[in-house]
Image (cartoon, rainbow, N blue to C red):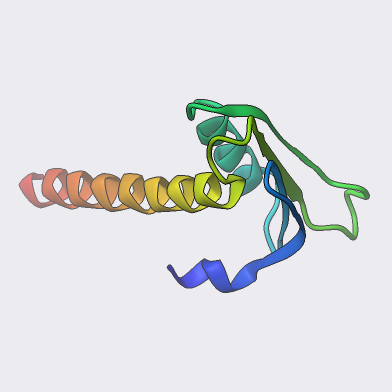
Length: 98
């Protein structure tokens, strides 16, 4: 995953993780949050942008402690890559028919 290098760990504990998405905006942060909140044992998922002109979004994921929030984040990121690959494959298949 190329853009994983742009993740910056802000805080981490057994039940909560905060990561800054360097160079990203609402789009990626919102996608991560929307997928994370659907996962079992996730109690909270949101993001914040402290100042819209100068700050990168910080994604916050909290769990009930039965799963690691970092594992949830990793699963979500892998799911995003899978969704992108599926979209690309279907798009290329459809484009080649045209």
